[in-house]
Image (cartoon, rainbow, N blue to C red; front, side):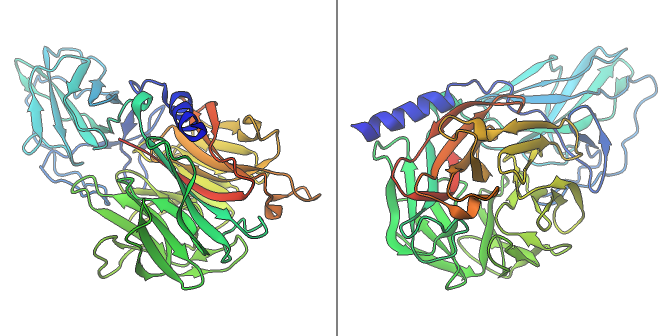
Length: 459
């Protein structure tokens, strides 16, 4: 009964929040673009060219605009809710109507994209599928003709978190409670599902190395790396179907919004004791690994906090420790946004980014251009008591994060390596503007050290 109550309480505390204004995104132009007050903007294509999910689309030659036609709309935004997106823009002088163009792929064009004629402003686009990115551009029209396309924006509708299902995976130290970097063989792969009432349970209970578990985008499996075997493995949530995928170390997972296939980002790990890195990052399909596709080799990449945006265009990480920033994929350039010991990239297309401070207590949150900076002290979470925390990770929902703590063992200013049996998994929910964590919940209560949590929220 305690496990069932714990699961229901977790859902209530974390996910009673509306998604009506969750995402407003304007896509960037690699390698640099013009900055608005929130994001960078990219002109939509007039030629019908479309990009793919991992590379920004290129703009084609402009279609001629009739003399006397109004100017293209500006300040276009897209705000996602559950199954719907609200699109709005700044009114254009001389316009008598507006046409809204949309697609499930980047690269809006008048010729190839779906058109909603005489769209109201704002326009509520309903009947959408949660978890899929939708792209928009708008034109203004009058008796003289139609303007060119506005800059393109994107948003991802998501399930109202009030009814969302959550899964958390982590590793538990059944040895000396000090294996903070998941290097040894005294770990268990653990999980919790808020919908089944089972509470904490072992996914793989035999002690071994299950480094950095990653829940797949669909939420039905866990990918982990075995440092001893130098291989990446995948296992079903119920512990069945365990199999080796390939050699290397798993860095991130990504679901292609165009076809739903899941991709594994990985590399050959070098270094140790928290300074592990990969000199190059590759990707391949998780379920049918083939010839590796090079994603990044401009700099080494620290293995612990590499994350990919929902559209596959950006990756947040340390390039390498302690230089945190955002890289444009595949293998273009990266922007340093600060220094720290861990990073996170929101799992949407806003490219919201954090750097975890070397004090192991604060998140410095910013955007892809280093603007809108704010700091949150996550060590103030109930149960942490101002002590150090570690393993901060952005969940699959852009307002949900996971971390571990408190770290109390030892007398040094940095107590992370001391671990400790009191180290548990905590889940937090950001407010809509990422200025505070408005709700916390302690996930584990087991008397063993718990490390490397990942959290998945149903779409």
